[in-house]
Length: 206
Image (cartoon, rainbow, N blue to C red; front, side):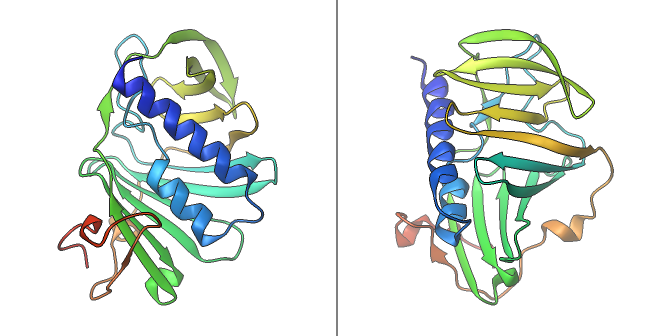
């Protein structure tokens, strides 16, 4: 199996583990922060980069458990923000170009965690499937490691089926996202993400 396919399979396995957790704890969000997003483009005919280069806002429902996430994406800088919509004030920031990951609780006033993973890359999926319509959007399916994703032509993942759970977009708006939404608070001293070493915290983020 190609390395990038293994990366996608690992991501899906870890995300499905997150879904099995009780509630939406910080540890669960940190696990997603470490693993969420295959390090790559979703291979359609032109291999568009995952999340693309266009700003958008998207709400996802995760099953089982009906957990809700809100994705915001700034295409010019390839920065992604994911908010838990459960009142826990948990937010994940990810710089897809640099691989930086930051998890904040109450914008860092109740906790901050940081780490680094590989920047987004490109890979060919094991199998390319057909066209579906999800939340009014046309998307193409592909599979890797027995899992299935459905991605729009401009790279937005509107569905991931992990086998024992599923994330499906409930709302998608392609509209300009204010750059300030992706700014990190200054002066914080984050802890490493669970399982990460002290030297895994990116320099100069805070």
